[in-house]
Length: 259
Image: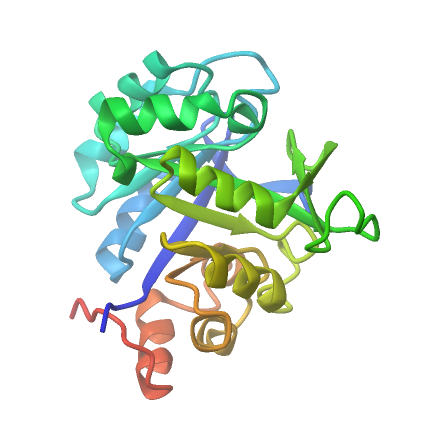
């Protein structure tokens, strides 16, 4: 049985890790390199970095940060934000990242998924999606609508249909970040995550809402996620990666121990 992955997320703004609730009221938490090293040493399986203001500011991703991360940790990491073309993907991968995450860009230019998969392999291309619950079931029969630009813009696109199409285009992994659950620490959106996981054949990563280890066990066992992204519950120091993994092992979740 494949082990489940624990992936700390570091949202970076002005070279600082930041966290908010439902994409709002962000506060700065610390240095991304120092936090990356601490989480890597603490036993996480992967990391993901989002340069959350790059696209809005119309600038490329902070390549120096990517290079600094690659020099200081020895686990896989993904990077998103400020990716606008194939050349940006190449620069990120050349700087040391294993995966590139595309979100708003993929909605506007779906072919970027196919182009990236052809150039670098599907394993390098992650589709990030930010779905929100909707009552417009005619346009979105799954009950979830894709948003872009950090929940600033609704697209009218059905989340499940977009996930299936992204897999067909060549995405190697899908991160399902529930806008409704983001930063709430009330638990992952199990219905949404399970819906996507049951209908695609590539790994699905749950994101948004993790607050206690039981929430991770639920999303692994009930929604069949392959990995879970966490942020607030470890950024606050309330839990360590080891504590989370110990509780997951006790709940019979297959987890890779690193100690």
